[in-house]
Amino acid sequence: MQFLLAFIVVAPLLGSAAALLPAPPGLKGKSPEQAVLRHGVTVTGVILAAAIALTLGFDHDAPSRFQATTDISWIQALNVRIHLGVDGISLPLLLMTALLFFLCALYSYFKLPAGPSPKAFVALLLVLESGTLATFAVLDLLLFFLAFEMVLIPMYFLIARWGGAQRQAAAWKFILYTLLGSVVMLLGLLLIGLSSGTFDMVTLASDNGRELSRTTQLLAVLSIGLGLAVKTPMWPLHSWLPDAHTAAPTVGSVLLAGVLLKMGTYGFVRILLPITPDGMSTFAPYLGAFAAVGIVYGSLACLALARKGNKGDLKRLIAYSSVGHMGFVLLGIASMTPTGVNGALFANIAHGLITGLLFFLVGALKDRYGTADLDTLAGATGAALYGRAPRFGALLAFAAVASLGLPGLAGFWGEMLALFGAFEPAEGLSRPAFLTYMAIGAFGTLLTAAYLLIVVRRVCMGDPKAGPELAVADVQHYEFAAWTPLVALTVLAGLWPAVLLGLTDPAVQKLLAGGNS
Image (cartoon, rainbow, N blue to C red; front, top):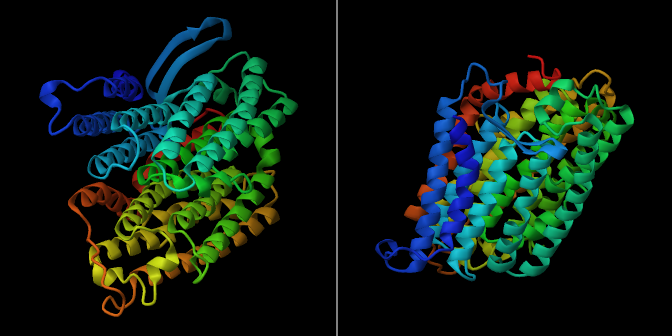
């Protein structure tokens, strides 16, 4: 177990270096490009297999305990250690990350985005995977920061070199926003480490902020929270997200929504809630307010894009929907209750699965029609996917109803639990304020249903014979392979939420109790 976790974090880096080397003659296949893409599928597949083995070997009777731990002294002068471990909070995120990277590598093997060398593409993808997996596995504040920053450069190049229109501007906006947030976050992490004498997250969480003064906690929450809010992204720090999603290649959008946004909310749960509880309780009402506004703002932006005549880009619409969905995650965290935090963690996973599927589908739709513009796709009678490509249309409708939170699918439980958490927030928080946030969030679910059903009506419905004769390919074999696991897990998590909640709840109870089970 200890070796497995270290292997999962380090192996993508080794695979990235190997991707840049010439392929052995016997493994080239039809071309060197094919060989390196096959290498990417193989490495991400091995990482996924290791993550599944780690999950099977995980002691599910003690999910609140860190398992598969490695603890080695690294920088003695600063008391920084290479400390790795997983519990019920980080294990689902680790597994989902490994799955999404494998599906993206598989999809890219058959549908590589236009751009420079495939070697560089695969190498950057694997560096990105290592950084995201490390973020969910490390238990040292400075290592967390390094892993958090490690993902920025590869994602910048994936957008800037393999993206679509306006990719340079979108990539610069992404890197500048996130770097600025990270600099502020580093100051807060250093403040905690130097004030307490340790950067070890387990020790700090067990202490539950008793070694930190109230002023230190307030400053730490303000600075670290700002950096995490940019990555989440929280309204009004979200403006880099729609541009990045619109310009990114399909797999870039899938990973950005499915994995990178989770790093911000994971930081709130893993660092701020247990280490600075007094500071969090002070800022929680403001975090809840920003979350509630973000829910409604994201939905209204999507409604505007979905309206006829507004030339709304479907990728941009799904990006704005992420602002709303992550608002529910932040609202659950702001409640500081086991119910709300469990809902936030569940919504994290559900959003990764469902929005990852949506970006896969919208990217494939753009490849088929040459555009993601909703007005162009709808035309006079609608793109009529139900008639032209019935399986594709059914998948798009499924992803849409899952995203709007239909009971029985994964999107329902996280949002419901987040609202329940706001209904009865932690002691010391203003219940009238959180009841207001809950009402606003519930209204946001109605707006979410409205814009997603509009999208389904305009894209999927219509008379295929009345419009222009367009040959639209239905779901291809490689698309079926890449998308089916996301559909299956969305249904499984919706019908059997105890699979996930059984892992997260004991770990959340211990985390909020100051490290005491």
